[in-house]
Length: 281
Ligand SMILES: Cc1cc2nc3c(=O)[nH]c(=O)nc-3n(C[C@H](O)[C@H](O)[C@H](O)COP(=O)(O)OP(=O)(O)OC[C@H]3O[C@@H](n4cnc5c(N)ncnc54)[C@H](O)[C@@H]3O)c2cc1C
Image (cartoon, rainbow, N blue to C red; front, side):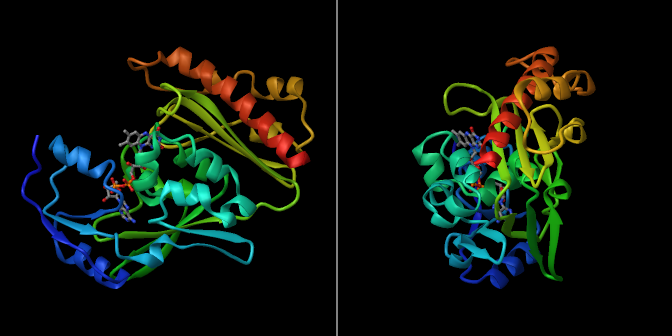
């Protein structure tokens, strides 16, 4: 199907982009277009104005500031895979980007676009919650920073509202004693997830977020049962046992709710063991 007629703007500054998004009802930011253009073709979205972020180089920057890894919203998944800053500070982001879809999607798709869509089957929402990331959002009235938990609001809904522009994602840089893991079952080798878990341990304290079991990444109720990174498989299995029963996941053509509960438990065990191994160095 052809696209409905749409106006197109290509701002050269972040301020101009925010003004365009604010001034026009029905304006939408265009990042890599990997989701937006497809949903426009299906007429599931019909923006009146596309505000193309392609010229905003400052939104592509990846840098380390003190103990924080700063990733511009327009950094592509391919750029994240190649980034030495990511490799040094939080390598799981590059490893995860490498498993998303195919070369074309990774070359065009951006981290900002991935999380602004908030498709519950996407890779990055649970990972960024587990890593304790925060998001910076610019609007006509200024800038605000929200935690990853506050950012993801519902299926395809985030804290980015009308007139808002996500500018960067901040992730604490990993120090000694930090380990991250991500595990799950995908539809095919590089497909979206059926269920997943992301786990992170920093100085013995765990953060675990589950994907595909709720509208937003779900903090697993087993974090406090895990203390320290020095956990073996039996201890992790024991801590995670019964996690599935606390969940109310959806059922669909890919998995029943019961199967998702089981996958959530198995994925959590695997993600925690991966993270523990990394933390031990
Ligand atoms: C075939 C295919 C397979 C895929 N498989 C996977 C997968 O397995 N796992 C996975 O995680 N992802 C997958 N994706 C999604 C992909 O990784 C991209 O994340 C996704 O397409 C959105 O990124 P984008 O940069 O293309 O955003 P766009 O499509 O340009 O934008 C998406 C939405 O976010 C908004 N937006 C984008 N950037 C901003 C911003 N800075 N501020 C405010 N709003 C913004 C747009 O207005 C739009 O509503 C797949 C995509 C395709 C096409």
